[in-house]
Length: 364
Image (cartoon, rainbow, N blue to C red):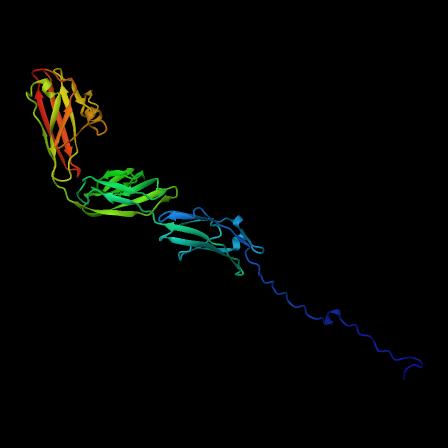
């Protein structure tokens, strides 16, 4: 029985705060990148070239822009307009291009950001032409080493030099002008020896058979591709030249040795020079040799003789004209001296022969 006047009260039960429910927050969706690259400038160093010359493409980070992505994140591909492309690494700023055909080629660059937004640049045109001139060969059937002439009849506009590929690995460069006549020959196949720092023959063997002669034209943009100007056919030359020293008459008279003469002929490639010296020895044993300046040089040993008179740079060379040669000898030989003439002849195929003639002088 409840006390009179009391009221029944329900006890309150606290509700934990973490049991109150709330609406979930939806996840944030990424914002789609729809803004692609806005700048992709590039440069080409030339807009017109010859086949064989090189175009250089240049593009730096300063030439690129994108509102969202760093320039290092952009991919780039060059389309050269000839069916070839060059993907570029982020660090690449220059690319060299050599076209293999003539024509007019439109160069563009496609730049993409990581979202795939692309920018294709306006095209820059490269005109590629063939540099050609008119060049003739004086001979086409030759012996090894036989001289022939390459002559320019016409040259491409703007050409300043031209390079002749003689087909032997040893080219030569000349000023480009109409009527340039360059003499050359083919004996060996040459190669550059990095150790000796000079050209050396390949295997030491001489070239035979057909060889194509080519010319490449040059201007400030570089060399063109080679232009074939003709084919020469090389026959083997195994003949040594013939060489004589005419016996002075009378041989014992010093004045008879003031002119030394002889003959030099060749069956194959031909002989152009006789290489020689004259030696004299005095009654008391002093020895002298004659050098290329026609000066008597006293020598004391074989090494001296070679240094003063026999090396090609100081030796006496005399031309062969219609199979004959002669040398004027300065005063020096006299009575009671010995005299000795050395002569060597190489034909243009480098076949060799030598002769000597000597006398003891008993008269002036």
